[in-house]
Image (tube, rainbow, N blue to C red; front, top):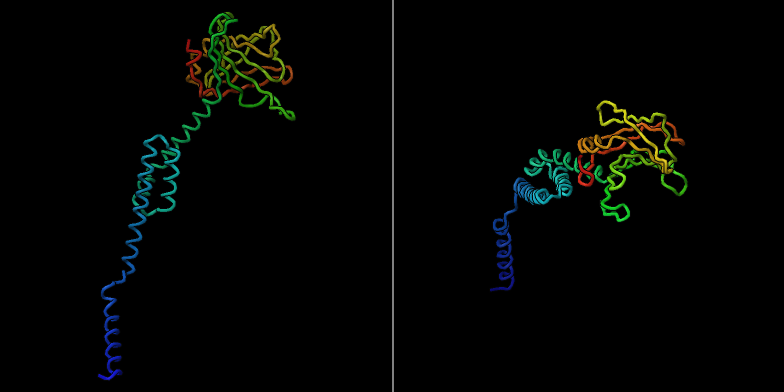
Length: 247
């Protein structure tokens, strides 16, 4: 056979083989491509949803919320996103409430220890007022007022205010106005100590220890020698009665 004929037969055979290839390797249609893409998206969203459920069950609601927001923003048309939309706002409210509870609890400082000089166990709980008594000076913190509850083996049970901005003053007889949330104003006896501390006693210990655990805010009207009449507000909603007790 002549070489020219041989080369022609080989070329025709190669062409025939190439013509058959598309039938063996079918190209997906546009609809099939979209279906595959959607399946991958839904699988990834479901994987994130499973992580969300595990974190929430493990007490990590804050991280679970981050995942929920991510799924809703990035995979909005998936069943996982639809499920999360029904859960995310209640979860966000729960996290906000828990953060506020921790903030309020962190405002209180407690001490409970045996004091040999006092002759027994001394227990205190105190919280700073929400607003300072005066502007801060250069290099110093703003002066503040404290509300203190104390149980002392020698001095007894007391509620008193401490001032970082000079002493309190009070009329004769000494009276203080105290308000627990929206309850009626209580007019109680006050007393400025003769020992010189910038303090004033609020003679209402029994009422304080009984009602503080169920109170959000306490407001006390007092007068400072260096600042005049003030309403001192205390966010007491995080108070724990464990140290001081309720009676």
